[in-house]
Image 1 (cartoon, rainbow, N blue to C red):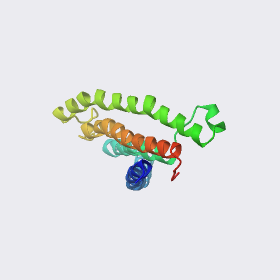
Image 2: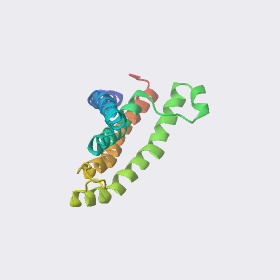
Image 3: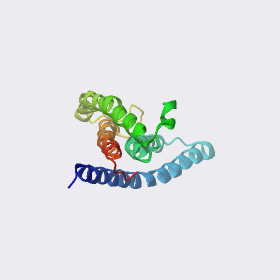
Image 4: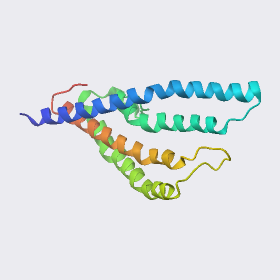
Length: 174
């Protein structure tokens, strides 16, 4: 079996995981919408503050973005600032993606992952909660999204490397 088949299988497995992550995260947008609506109605309709509900919107927003980065990368939804990229052929784009992933994405995600571990561990030791009276007691869970999002991006970065290598090797699944 040619090496590109193994790489293609790995890429497809990781991409399926990213798709699953996206499907799990997507409903959180609806929950966040409803919670935001309830916050607005309670605040402006009834002059009632709901700190826990407000913070739940923040938690949901954070979860959607932090856990959705890898899915967005898989979908090609990230912002490209390379003006020349569009003019390159498939091989040129594969090379840009390969080197960009190797020299920018993976090192940055590795840095975020490892540099956040002590920060998150300290928060877990304290079982850190909200600084707001009546707030949610789960700040440590929120902070856990930092290394989790970096890890998901690293995994998806491996899929992007595989995609680039299969494109350069002559096989592609897109």
